[in-house]
Image (cartoon, rainbow, N blue to C red):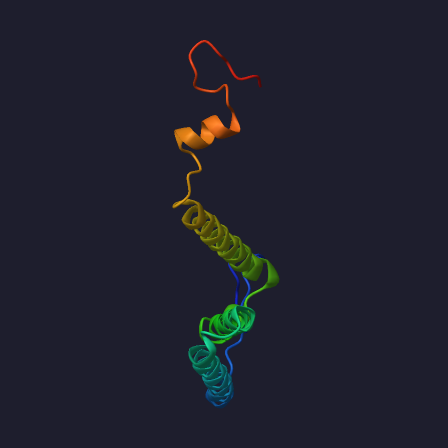
Length: 144
């Protein structure tokens, strides 16, 4: 007798045997170990050349970020069993994650712009009067 599902939307995934499960865990663990060793090597390279080329350091940081996302993919698909779910559920998890990642990048970019402008005279009365000479003087209104 097969499994009786409560609803057609519910899917049932047959569990693999213990031998197959341990083989998958072993394979993913080896992948994660290799990716972690590459990330550590990149960190050592950054430590050695941090006073060198800023472009090279930036590219290595991008590589480390990509490796970190790849590790997150392996962990969620194997150990959290997201790889066994149907496509719609995976997209329900992954699309907000991508939007959240974009959100973090946008805030870091905006924070960096704030940091660059914090020690300038942008926003001060002197700056506003220099850009708009008529602004702020009694009886004279700036044209919009």
